[in-house]
Amino acid sequence: MSILQKLQQPTMTIPEKYRSLSKEEMEQRVRKIKADLGTKLFIPGHHYQKDEVIQFADAVGDSLQLAQISAKNKAAEYIVFCGVHFMAETADILTTDEQTVILPDMRAGCSMADMADIHQTERAWGKLQQLFGNTIIPLTYVNSTASIKAFVGRHGGATVTSSNAHKMVEWGFTQKERILFLPDQHLGRNTACDLGVGLDEMAVWDPHKDELIFDGSIEKIKVILWKGHCSVHENFTVENIKEVREQYPEMKIIVHPECRREVVELSDDNGSTKYIIEAIQKAEPGTSWAIGTEMNLVKRIIHDHPDKKIISLNQNMCPCLTMNRIDLPHLLWSLENIVEGKENNIIKVDAETSKYSILALERMLERA
Image (cartoon, rainbow, N blue to C red; front, side, top):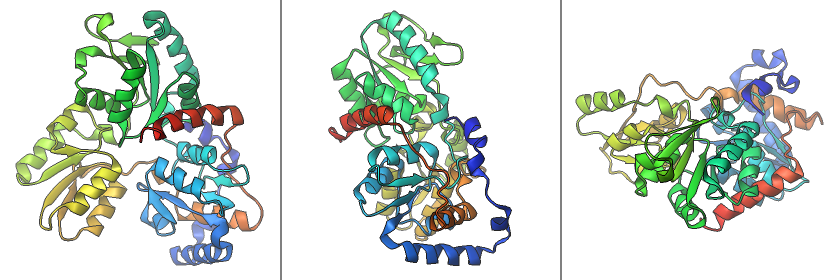
């Protein structure tokens, strides 16, 4: 489901009365419902969510971690996923048929995930097979739709996370001569470079032009990068790094591998959201850091570490707009609907898609 389709969903409309409630009243109502429902309710919250929502999360983490935690929680009848659409899909895939996964706001999508739809991917696969024959294995970042996960599973591939991308790309090369990496070109490029693949051995598939973009010999291509990106992380620039180096020479720069290659190369360190959080936790008091990732998380890290000087690598960066769709009014609305038996915004992945998505996830988890 694309962001446009999500915006067209009639179930997303929140009654106006919720907009007139005070923050205190909404918080009080949420606390009461959580207490009344007890173990029947589980609220996972992604790291990038607003504090007004995170305060009610039963678990905070990255997308796959939260889906796995949800799957282990057999007591929960309702999983109200405070994240984005593809995360809720993964939770539905991994949980039982008796559990209901709800996304408080159907507009909470991911622009990166939407940059690779199944029709584009199947069309690209056909053309790439004509060019390269049966020499390609597809890998997809977990930040992708269920249909893309299923496509990858159907064709012998696996999912990857930003934490295990190196391991999974190495595995991919034991299976086939070439890798198609979906949907984030930057994570794919950064990972492949770290493993010694040259930039002249990579190509980019443009799904809008239906063409392969590359320099040099087509026979040399080892990694085919889907032309997709995270709209937040792509906005960290070399100029941001230069400014930090000039203003704070002692400051270390740590970024997410969804950033552009040139930004990652000029940084002191890079890693997944979990890696960044733990790196700051382990850092000595008095150290200073510029962090290149989503602003809500950076603000939370700043709050949690008053003994360190921490800034955003781009201090004019806005929080992820789609990640921020889930707010306190939508959370309360979803919970009150559950109490009233009006379950809205249920996320349900069909059995066939779930079957092959699980294959892709299991291939990764076997090597985690």
